Each structure stands twice: as structure tokens, then as C-alpha cells.
Amino acid sequence: MTYENILLETVEPGIYVLTVNRPKSYNALNAATLDDIHSASQTVAADPDARVLIITGAGDKAFVAGADIKEMQNFTGIEGKRFSEKGMRTFHSLELLDIPVIAAVNGFCLGGGCELAMSCDWIIASENALFGQPEVNLGVTPGFGGSQRLTRLVGRARAMEMLVTGNNIKAEQAERWGLANHVYPAAELMEEALKLARTISSKGPLAVGMAKQLVQHGQDIDLEVACAMESQAFGLAFSTQDQKEGMTAFVEKRKAEFAGQ
Ligand code: CO8
Image 1 (spheres, protein in one colour):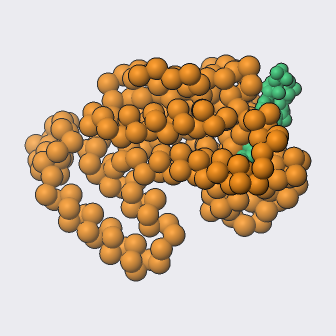
Image 2 (cartoon, protein in one colour; image 1 turned 90 degrees about the horizontal axis):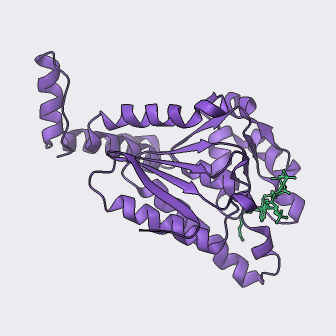
């Protein structure tokens, strides 16, 4: 399937790379780009061989510099609400995927771009990456979940500071604050993303999917219910061939070959 505003490629078996591809606009997210990302997430969801999705931005300047300000400039209130809801649905579809989604942030990661990155399961960044929620500079708030996901990732005070000052933070500060897991030289970013993807691809895919969903669904509910959910998933794992293969391979001192069944 071809898209107007993104590229979706399988670069190695099971490893998808989605590149937001509007480099002239620093990969700004207009409505059509959100539709493309949503459609791509459904394509990946429908592929039983998919193991990891990496999201990055085209060019060497930006991951995504925000929602498209030129498109939003003359929105009515209801158009703003609908655009916000479109972004919310699109980004949530990444959280719902049964495979890990890694943001490889390669430059400006602002506003809707930061919100996209935070909807991925974790972020790795290039040394020149810059993170921020600069919406207050434009007289608006975040609209794709930034006020909530940023708070959950970096804590209330740090999120508040970023949201109300509109100040950006550099990659190393994002790493210190827990927004980015790792920072690499720009030229090494995609290879590091692929290394991560290969590691994940070698594991039991059903267990990987369950672990992701436990974190995604468990983080906002109370500990007792979340732990009960973990017990259910743990039990369910014993009904899979992957569990038999994984534990038999350990006992036989060989590498496990998982089939995802
Ligand atoms: N939207 C549209 N176009 C953009 C955007 C954007 N967010 N960011 C950059 N561009 C375009 C510029 O207009 C320019 O295009 P052109 O050459 O045609 O004028 C091109 O990309 C390059 O940009 P600059 O010339 O400005 O490049 P600089 O290197 O000088 O500056 C910056 C780079 C600092 C990234 C600067 O472009 C900038 O500040 N961009 C805007 C950043 C921003 O404010 N982002 C947040 C947007 S609001 C948002 O994301 C809210 C999300 C929720 C929406 C909810 C909907 C209701």
C-alpha cells in the first residue's frame, strides 16, 4: 500500500519502519498524515508476522515539528475538537498494537510530534533531538494527549514546566527525565533502532505482546487489579507453543525458535 504522507516499509522480516514523510514542512502532521498513520497501524495490526514498528521522520532536521499550524490556523472550535479526536484515535491505535512501537526521534520533536513519540512504547533519540510542547506559544494547549502522557512519563512538575513555559529540552535532558530511553549520534540512530527491533523479534512474540499490553493497560489502574491481570496473562502464556518451546530450549541448552503460536 502506498501513502501520500508517510512511507511504510518492511526493512527486515517482521520489522516495519514508518517514516513521516513531509520533510519540507518538518514532517508536520496534517489530517491526511494522521489518516495515513492510522491506516498504517491497521496494516501492521493485520500482519501476523509483524514483530516491531519503528516510527521516524524523513530528513535530518525533524522527527515531527508538530501538528500542521498552517492547516489549523483557521479552524473553528468544532474543527479543532475533531482534529484533536482524530489525533487521539490515531495515536491510541499505536498503543493498542500487540507489538512494540519504538520512536526513533531524529530532530525536532515538538507539539504533536512529541505526542506521537510519547504514544510509542518508548523513545530513542539522536543527539540533536529537541523535545517540547510549545503549544502555549500559539495560544493553545496540547491536543493529542500531551498534557497527560508527558505527565505520566516525566512526572507532574517537569511536565508542568514544559507545558506552561513552552521551553524545549535537549536529548540528554529528555534521557535524564525518562522521556527518551537512550541517546545516540544521529548517524547511528536507525541502526540502534534496528538492533533493538532484532532483539525483540528473537523473543516469543505472544509474550512480547502480552507484556506490552500489561504495561499499557496496567499503568492507570490500581495495583491489585493490574497484578490480577498479570496472573491471567502468565497463565495464558502456558497455553502457547511458544512457552513449551522457550522452556524446552532452556532445558536442552539451545536457542529457542518461536513460532508465535
Ligand atoms: N506546521 C506547519 N509547518 C511547519 C511546522 C508546523 N508545526 N513546523 C515547521 N513547519 C514548516 C515551516 O513553516 C517551514 O516551511 P516554509 O519554508 O514553507 O515556511 C519549514 O517547515 C521549515 O521551518 P522553519 O523555516 O521555521 O525552520 P527553522 O529551522 O527556522 O525552525 C522550528 C524550526 C523551530 C521547528 C520551527 O519551524 C517551529 O517553531 N515550528 C513550529 C513548532 C510548533 O510550534 N509545534 C507545535 C505545533 S501545535 C501542535 O502540535 C498541537 C498538537 C495538537 C493539535 C490538536 C488539534 C486541535
